[in-house]
Length: 640
Image (cartoon, rainbow, N blue to C red; front, side, top):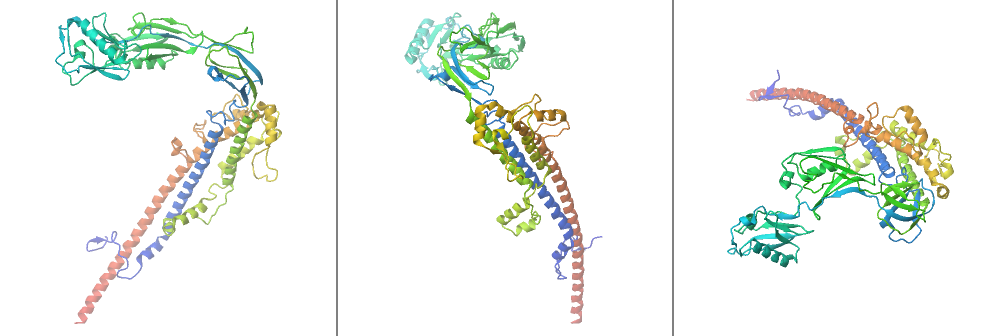
């Protein structure tokens, strides 16, 4: 049973030397110092693990940056693995509008020399068809004008009956008259439209169904009801406020064309089936993303649909078979009645052919011949002369930038591996930080973090693999890096830094840029992937160039794909990557979580022990207090 003073439990009441005069806090702090040191030690272990994880993240981010700087597929100027850049295309005539007709790009396989495009006779085109007539073309009323009661009298309303907008320019149409018949109404509307916009820009007429029809060739018109007008002219003639002389393709086929059947058709063998409530836009989108290899569009300028094959050339074609509904076919409400379209054309040009006797024909406007890629834009009879030549400066810059980035990367890794440790600088406790300034804490932790990755096996393995990537011979390449002017320091063998002899390297590039670039980017049929067998890895390694090997080393450490054992890149397995599953599933994160659990347990043990001591000291203080009270009572009795 726990004794109490005035009903208070000793377990919860801490009496600190009031009766005994002892410094209870200090005594108990010393009694639990072993447990407190254990908590501090575990917290220090956790902090070291966090710092180590952050240091790995810095290395990981550095490798990612190198990968993005040197192997970015969208940056042909700096990506040392891409074929472009080793050759230049230079115009040798004064055709100022050269780029209007063609773009020319030479890769490393192009043969140096002078070339002439004598004529671009024809541009490749896709097979296509278009609506044979406008699909809407007019704003049409639904009321038979002969069914209205004449005279049609709006004369009692003040100049506000309805509005019309032509290409965004709105005018008020005053129908505040009495019309003897529909002809008078049409004539008055046309007179006002001509005054507003010029002759025949907007025309009113009577349709074949004897309804009011508003048209505006190559322009967009819209009718707008005037809210404060009690005479709703538009409603009387069966026109809705907001109607336009265009199709609203966000509306369904049923709403636009009174489709009352399921819509079904085939294009190039692909079957499409839609409910009549499907919007025309959704039908078009489905066609465009399908395997039919066609694109359908609607122009608000022409009010027509266009169906075009995605392929170009005479071999391109479009086959349409309407099954149900009237989207296509003889009764097509988009006015595309063709069933087979084959009107594409090939690109035709002449190269180095002054007599123009040997046509070069291609189905696409973009094609490559002998390492030169041509992108045709327009036909022309104007001769275009150009030279293919070695791009010495471009190749040199690409190699220089790669080597510079490589040196910075491997130097940073080497420094981390050999960074000095200051073992006397441990992670600070909360009590120690409380007695220091922010600057003092910063300087202390800088020393404590130093050497956090010293002699680290992961970094040492990366450094070793990067060195061997340079040292090991590239199979099938007859020259070495020394032959092209790239060497290592002669004096300091511990420092791995590539040194470029600019004169020597540029000389070798000018002779044969492809031979030089093979040392860096030579490829192998076996492509890099996480699941390569050790045999395939070895074969790939021997065949590929230095830059390819560096790429593989980086990918082995930072890839998010898994190998056959289920592991991601080494650095991700060790320290994780934000936004990836490895963010929480990595070795250091597991270690930190385990330490946190042990810290929690150690704190609980320390607090329990502290509570027990406080319970005993509080009971002692209470007993001493009772004894003092009794002594005082006895003293008072003897003093009477």
